[in-house]
Amino acid sequence: MAWQQVYNPAGSMVVSTLLAAIPVVVMLVGLGFLHLKAHLAAAAGLAAALLVAVFVYGMPAGMAGNAALLGGLTGLLPIGWIVLNIIFLHQLTEQNGSFKILQDSIAGITEDRRLQLLLIAFAFGAFFEGAAGFGTPVAVTAAILIGLGFSPLAASGLSLIANTAPVAYGALGTPVITLAKVHGYDLMAVSAMIGRQLPLFSLMVPFWLIWAFAGRKAMMEIWPAILVTGLSFAIPQFLVSNYIGPELVDVIAAMVSMTSLVLFLRVWQPKTIWRSVSLKGHEQDGGEGHVAEAPKKHPAADVIRAWTPWAILTVFVFIWGLPDVKKYFNGIFAPAFPIDGLHNLIEKMPPVVAKPTKEGAVYVFGLLSATGTGILLSAIVGGLVMKYNPVQLVTQFFRTIWLVRYSLLTIVLMLALGTLTRFSGTDTTLGLAFANSGVLYPFFGTLMGWMGVALTGSDTASNVLFGGMQKVAAEQLGLSPNLMGAANSSGGVMGKMIDAQSIVVASTATRWFDHEGDILRYVFFHSIALACLVGLFVTLQAYVWPFTAMVVR
Image (cartoon, rainbow, N blue to C red; front, side):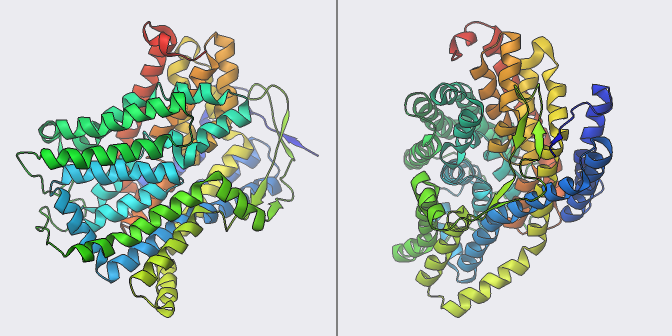
């Protein structure tokens, strides 16, 4: 017999909202203020979510356990699988010395740490977001930045801040495509609407990134390079999203941005070279020093060899991100396991959906099509190119598993928590609290998307969770459904930097274990401030001319 979700179990939306927030509060307080280890904070949040789901929302205990199980499995594959294999590749390149050569080659383009951030964290990270998403860009860029000598907090926090503007079109447009498919939006219309919101922030985020790293004065010293980086990303982002479609938005924009910045740096360099590797105002953030060593010059052949594993990674990740490739691999091997006691036994209820709708709960073991598998193969091929033998590769792989064991456990627990809140309806209660904001709905509806990503770790999941609610609320308020559907995704990108999954990925990539709370405290202000700015912009698009002319009806 199906269990129907209840969104106001206490009979008062204020009380129900406070109760629904308990699991998230428990986890964030444990992580950010009590300084618990990440897996312990996640376990405490999951325990609280189970108690709230069963005793407040009346969810059968068996269903609650099965929902957590489904989330845990999803945490291992695909998310944990990406983290494990990108750290495996990084370990290989570090141990044979090629990563140091790569570091020197990047410093050869520019020794200025601010410009390195633009190139690696923003532009290069955007490419990996567009090609793969789901934690890949933060894992790659944080690992590269720590290898370049950035302090752990700088490498982690700045990678998270940079990985915002590209997220809505990540993994070859998966969040946008899913939003349209699941909730009946016109794909090109909602893609175009997102492409009329995010370019402003694609221009803003590089400035924000350097300000967060080095301060306002140091940011202004390199404003021409920042402007080139942001504009060369924002303009293709707008054009491709509006006139081609969502699939290649990030890939094209990132390639244009990287190329433009590198070419610009051939004719322009700042008067003052910034060599600090720590965040301004956080000089004791885990860094071993504040001044980087001067880069060594290496023979061209050595530089090519050092970049080869990462070039191989780029090719494999892009291929694995292609829908036809995923479809092919899934056709070979992708067994689906309906979760007994959960699959089609939960019904979402109005006003979230137009009529009671059963929630599927199927775990697809898509090992071949998983992005992490492409990363693993690229690591193996790269390892063989680097002259590792098979025994050394296997040995290093198991060493990497041991290295990231607690991070993998944390990701499993975080995803279990997020999945349980979705199936129990607690996250929908939180969403409805935003939906009851009347004329201020464009602002708070945007924050709903932010909250959705912060809770689930995925813009795709947030669009699935709240995309229908955005459509219903917009129609009731006389707003464009495309505007609010897009706002859910655009606001959601700013929640990416504080979702627990991304923070664990960053701490693992930088090997700054047990400092997830430090990272969370650092990025939280940036996340909420940028989300509010997106909300204000969406509000202008809803009510104020000439911004209303940008809305796709």
